[in-house]
Length: 58
Image (cartoon, rainbow, N blue to C red):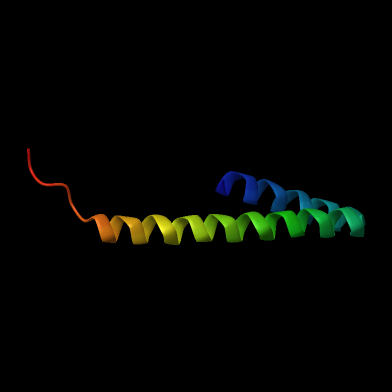
């Protein structure tokens, strides 16, 4: 997921340097949405890990 964020961010930067404003804004919006989705999934994973704790030894 983080790879997609970086890919769209790089595409937005390249499009902005070439002067494609609308396309750059679209790529930046997609990168921002994916970043927040990644952040929410990270927080949920950390909370679930803390709630579950360690597994008992076999």
